[in-house]
Image (cartoon, rainbow, N blue to C red):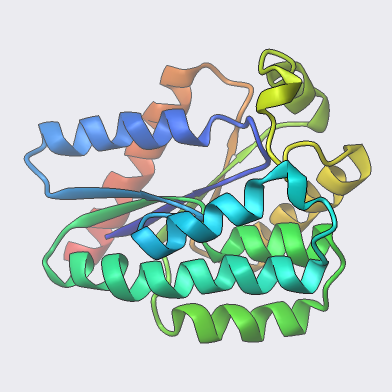
Length: 208
């Protein structure tokens, strides 16, 4: 099963990825966790370029092609091979992030974004996507605990940008049946319980 977690920065994705990994390993499942951008030697080098605050002059078009280049490598080098071996692949972000951030957030044509995403991933589509939804104000509160020197190039974007990103995610969730929206202001265990319940339900449907 290919499972992805999405949301604006500081929504709690990474925490839930870790907890899901622990749960699946306890169930004796084979699990591989990946992050975006990154996950391979080439993709991690691209990640460094993308998130470096010194690259403030990066254009939107450059940004989307770099994200997609990293993803194309990750899909072919890691995701597909692990799925073919029967692993549960859990990804901290995938191409929905590009649609939300570079499409709705940066303003690149959604149709163009879809074509770029399709070229990067082909038929490698998540089985289920969890969108952990938090208001921008909550993201700011959580982000304030991280010093400004540690914030990356994307994280320093402002309220208008993140509002557009969140709206983009909500639109995607309304269009894609694989999406599950989870209230990110719930406590960590409540969110985890919901994730597990949804995965068990999906597994039962697949095996039925």
